[in-house]
Amino acid sequence: TWTTHATGRLVDGKCSPTKHHVPAADDMTEIDPADLYAALTSNGMTYGPNFRRVTSLLANAKQAVATVDARLDDSTRHLAHPGVIDAALHTISPLIDQSVGHTLGTIVPIGVDAVRVFGPFPDRVEVLTS
Image (cartoon, rainbow, N blue to C red; front, side):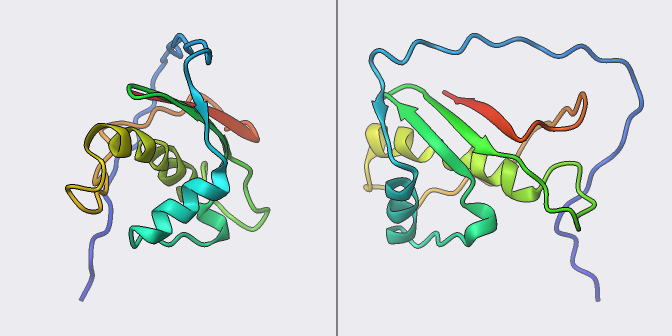
């Protein structure tokens, strides 16, 4: 038996990258990535080294700005390591903690609406979560 874990489609087309305003960090608190992953572990979400890709994180009650390590292992055939998308989702954790705390238990994002790849990923990507 086969278990489907993900489905997708490839579309060849011309797309223009979108530009997003990255907010000033004046009212944001720096969160050490080690502290982020310690908090996720204490909530039952343990990540191995290939999935601990957040390298810097700033957050306030409404948004987070992070840098994610997007480097690929030379042996992979991925356009982007699955851990890059997963790490982008990790950045919502401080927002959940500040808005509802631990009253709801562990909250896990379960989907990504769209991923658009306009070219090879750089070694690091900036993530804006709101």
